[in-house]
Length: 368
Ligand code: GCO
Ligand code: MN
Ligand code: MN
Image 1 (cartoon, protein in one colour):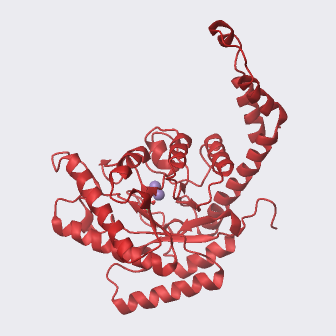
Image 2 (cartoon, protein in one colour; image 1 turned 45 degrees about the vertical axis):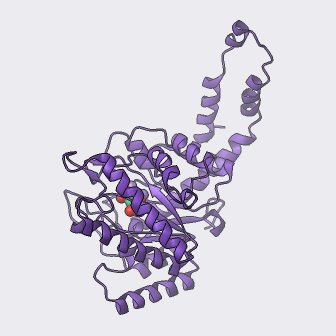
Image 3 (cartoon, helix red, strand yellow; image 1 turned 60 degrees about the vertical axis):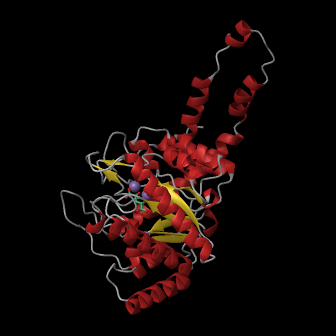
């Protein structure tokens, strides 16, 4: 039965093909779920009430497909999206799976690898345009090292900058309506990945030839892996006009990249995040980059997808309740009404944040 926590198109919830299609393979164990055909994934996402579907080039088109196969697959996928009322808000490129990228793509020491990566990315941007996607995510999963003997890290940064400049030039030449969103991650699959945090990308972007075309795609789990407060990361991206896209999932501190269902591990952090996105009026996709536990079958995958969106909407409603709470607001206002100007008087009153946080907890736990 639909209720007030049921997803609607205006919520702009999207999922990657690779998320609901995740087969539960990990470094220690094989796949536990069958391959999910992209058209099947579209059906599933429509059934659970998502608004959008995103994809890597090779989630849809196999890396070795002929031009004719590619066109057939893309046409079939477009038709499925249309039939099921799904949009493709974002696409990306897989620069990490194929062995050719074992030591990076844009930052590789081999000029042939760099050239191939650039060409592959241009074709993926073409595909995105064909599907109507206005955001193109770049996650440099293999742009990193196990040993820093392989290259000087500033060389890697220069190569990355050069590639981004060329991609922007290409999009401009083609008159494409697209913006690039850079996704950081500190490690995994490389021992260390360059541009380890969103903050690093916010530093790189102003040094590009077309900084207006490039923003960020922060991911909850990636910043948490680096021990950072994700809300603060997102706030900085937002405040500098660079929050082009967001990857929502969850993660326990100090672990490998777990890609848990949104809100499932750190409810309170998820609450502040949802409240922030809603309070500031972030209008981009709420994109879930997560997957179901390895214990799950097809029904579990659906429960996972529904859960991501439902938790978001419950937290959104709790945020509205928090904003409307008179005691909370008057406690917050009290300090900004402080007219004292001498040091001792200013330092005297307690700030009441224990109470404020407890009221927050009670809202979250359904006791307020
Ligand atoms: C990961 C990343 C990826 C990217 C995706 C889009 O840790 O595997 O989050 O899922 O988001 O490849 O480029
Ligand atoms: Mn991730
Ligand atoms: Mn991601």
